[in-house]
Image 1 (cartoon, rainbow, N blue to C red):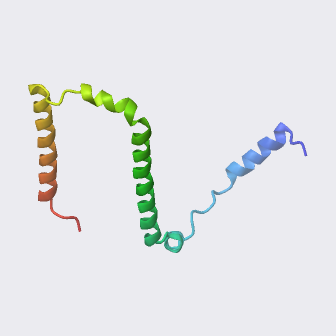
Image 2 (tube, rainbow, N blue to C red; image 1 turned 90 degrees about the horizontal axis):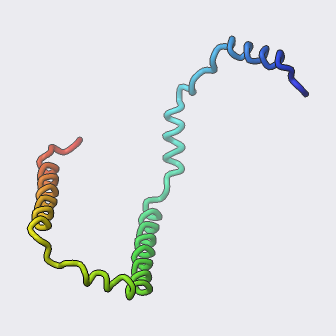
Image 3 (cartoon, rainbow, N blue to C red; image 1 turned 30 degrees about the horizontal axis):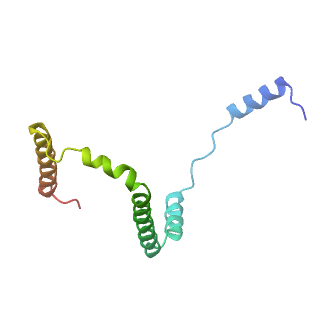
Length: 112
């Protein structure tokens, strides 16, 4: 069925003249909340999966170090162990920022 441009224009005009469809049903939020509750994953399964993923991540790190460690481990020997005064100043500034953030978090009143 081939529509001519006039047919398409007529359909567009009819569609634009119609009232917009009504919004979601009155109990839409309740239905979504019920569906989310029904389909929520079991917390025990999620904890188990997180532990498995963390173990796989640790194992993969160990494998990478075992395979590639001989190549990049000597590069750490060229790093200076003791930095100059500016290195100490930056480390102290970072620690001060962390301590200030932590203390302000502890002073903030708890949320309800």
